[in-house]
Every structure is written in structure tokens, then in C-alpha cells.
Length: 146
Image (cartoon, rainbow, N blue to C red; front, side):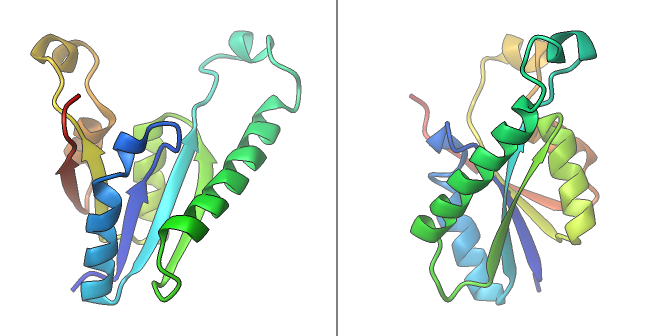
């Protein structure tokens, strides 16, 4: 029986949640589990890059994303569902794994779409990295191709 599900969402890309969110809601309801939505603000990568942004840029971005995610949860999650949300920063796949560990999530639900073979080899995907390294179960919900 599942107790805690984690669903990473990118609010700028509905394909990250349009199919995965209903699946996660259904699983959470069936198992009477908590559903946590996670959004990640990417890090700058290096201090050199960070120097080109205003000093409080990362904090302002995190606050704005937190508010957008709060409104998203209010509009997309049923009120009777045991749910919450959080915003963190860093490399997306690493942040997903770290949050899943900290929350004690026993299932990560993620959206993925088919990628050309060469792109998969060269770049990989967040979903592939999470699947490869997560100690808990990961459910990949395939999205429609455009």
C-alpha cells in the first residue's frame, strides 16, 4: 500500500503533468496516500553565471514559483485529497531524488515523452535519471507526442 506519492511538475510545460496528475490523484485516492507536488527552479550551474543576475534573483524566482504552484494546487487538486506542495532548486533529477528521500515518498510519478534515440543517448532525460537512481518505485506516465 502506498503512503506518499511525489509528482514533479513544471508549470511552464503542461506535458509534465497533464497525464501524470490524474494518474497520481487516482493512485493517492485508491491508497489514501499523501500526494506532494514538486517544482524545481534550476540552479545557475556556476558562480560565474549567477553573477549576471541580480543578487536576490534566485529567491524572487523561488517565491514566484511557490505562489504559482499554490494556485495550481488550489485549482487542480481535489480539496478532499491529502496533499501538499514544495519548491526547491538545483538540478531537476537530483532535486526529485533528494525530495523523495526527505519526504519518505514510496512512489515517484513522472511524465515522460518519447525522445529521438540520439537525443536520449546524448542528453538523457530527467525521468531516465530518476528511474535509474531512485531507491523507491517510479511510475512513468507516457504523454502524447506532438
